[in-house]
Length: 298
Image 1 (cartoon, rainbow, N blue to C red):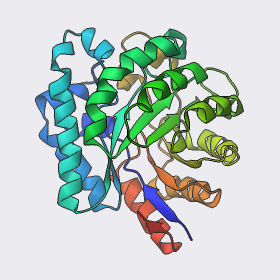
Image 2 (spheres, rainbow, N blue to C red; image 1 turned 120 degrees about the vertical axis):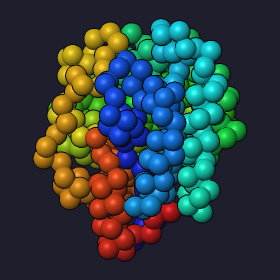
Image 3 (cartoon, helix red, strand yellow; image 1 turned 180 degrees about the vertical axis):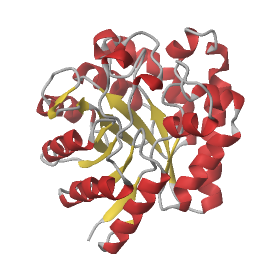
Image 4 (cartoon, rainbow, N blue to C red; image 1 turned 90 degrees about the horizontal axis):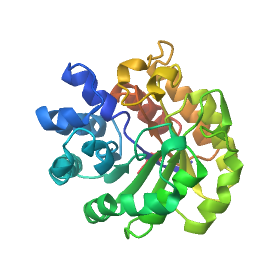
């Protein structure tokens, strides 16, 4: 049996749902501004059901995204809210790790408009230097192309903390990144920067399973955390999208999701959890299944 790191589930989407507010392009950033106490409760809920990692709500809190709405001067305060909430939940729980989330520049799933790696490295440098001293792991999420992943890795490896990188794959062909590039082709870039772990994230679990089978041959610690959307719609790929352009699946119960995740563990994954639309009930079921199979959650 294995030692398994159990990530939390959705953070941003869970915050938006609990807030009851209308979806905006700011996504969960607006919740931190208006209802910061919700962030504390979401982290606490995930720890209470078995998660061993708190992922900071910093995925979309990037200078370029905030500048579009005139909030760039609030970035440090927002980073502090997110970091403090995750650290407090960890400390109150008495164990666990804090993973500082760093999402794509400009927009998710749009590698075609992402700055090239050299420029992206510079744009990421501030947030990484700010988050790294306060976290246990730097978690790069939802990288859609090889060049996009390289830009984030170039900056993250300078942070002095373990780096985990999440790659997002085509919803209906997990052998390819969302850019259309073959997933196997990213290995040379990974080898150049040597992250501690490589994951597949924010894609349909069926596609994630295909991607996990490829990661198993890369020689890195690997894992996965899928989303619960039917697919990433064309509407969400427009400028300044809101999450109501995406449709939640109705067939991904906690039991169904855990079936996928346990298959990833069987394939050798040692880091599993959930992404958008995968909530505390899913993580609770997965924690129970892992323990029942004799795995230790670390």
